[in-house]
Image (tube, rainbow, N blue to C red; front, top):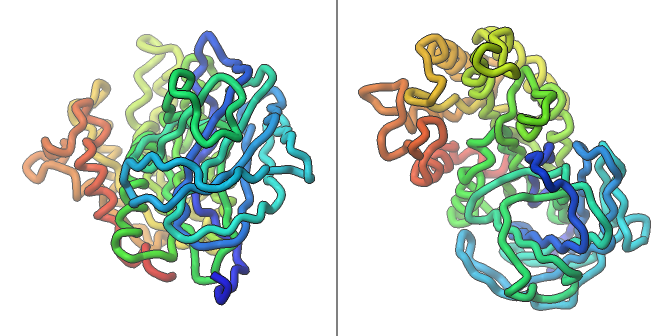
Length: 395
């Protein structure tokens, strides 16, 4: 790598941060979290963004480390152990990192040379009682964390009897790498559908297809809506509304394009206070309401940042428990706008790819997970394949 010039910061991994699911136990103590990040760019330094955006108390990371693993096959299930001594992650040259309530912080620049295709482990140890109120639930072949009770942040491997896998990603929000000027980030923005597997499959497709100058950054929160948010304990984990989320999540180093696939929860959630006191009919949008929200909250801000903006059509909902023809009408009208509005740079037509040609309001049978709202794993792979190749190449 000595002949390569590393001059540009680019996000190589990222999630959204939202309110975690409120259960009886919301604090942890003497806990180690570890998240593996497959690095798609060669580089010489890292920056780690930690978020307590939705927390109501300061969070203290007692110590954090990054350690390099050997190369792994993209999308594989290789469990190689760290191959070098862990490097301390610091903030203001201090090993203890405090994330104020409602805030995000970025670490010092951490020197660590990596080659594209290698994996780094980021480990965080929390000695004291910690409010676990800032994180997000994501799934996919590249999204596998683990935790253990005890201080194991500097060990290559957690004790087997004390470790457990997790798909909850707490506090670690984004990883930036100092890399070559040609490299860039593509953001996938949305709700539970984007919080599941298709962004990981898109990352795998890019790598295996030889598109080595693009990282896939996922900004997705299960249950989130464009126009509303829930201010109640029951649905707190459904997160912040789009107007609040989007400007924060687009603050992504090296990003130049965003795919937006969002809005289905606005359509399916309202049922009336007689059925659910937190879901009044007044929350039910028209297609025009959704269009104005996307144009004003999303497109306008993304264009200010110089991003290209691609729409993603909403998937079928026939058979979902709140399905009604009037909801399908809103979805259809909104999808037509997503396909045709000139404010977008293009459209990824996920709906067309996954729907039943003979019954377009429904998934094709092999693409339905069974709940008639979320796609099957086969469908998530197809969603990744539906993204135009031009979004993976050099912009």
